[in-house]
Length: 113
Length: 114
Image 1 (tube, chains in turn brown, yellow):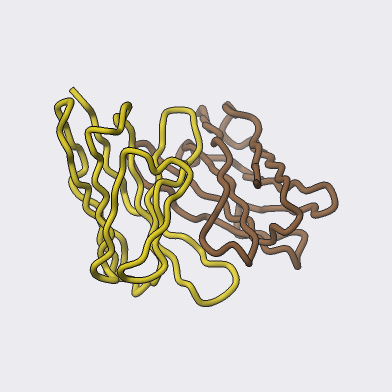
Image 2 (image 1 turned 45 degrees about the horizontal axis):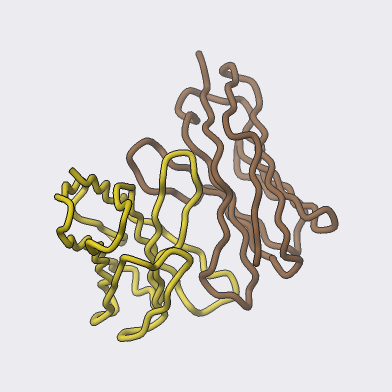
């Protein structure tokens, strides 16, 4: 079955610096890769996603890159702010496996002022 | 407001009791899901449903049961057979049409067994 590995498990950055989280997947049929942000005691919120027909997508301070050959994708947060502190999850899915996402274990990001 | 609601937010259960967690969505999504989240771990799929009156087991279905009598509702029962039920439970929904089926999550229910 499909497996998604996520690194690092924890990430501490100074406010204003960049944060990068990397995920690796195993199923070559995967073609949809969402990223979720989960604040303490709340459900995950979709923050950005990327589909296999593009290599990079940006939304203000957040960007995601995809390397299908190497089977990995990354989340980049620039100019980090204290409100970026949360757990971030990556996920992967193939279009012929509706709804059955494989999630990474999560990265705890702490932004220190 | 459109979204997914879960209740209660916190739930305490004595050993040997069954408890039911509520999940309702008004997004008109066909598919609904239940996940379990333990500290430091990713989301594990318990059950999922594509349509009313139909559902399938996920990766960790033992000790859980669900029903899907209405499109909007997908309650999860944690039975006494679940040996380690203390966890954070997340409900999600997604459309079926389209190739990507983005999932949207509810706020979660934290279950603690006393």
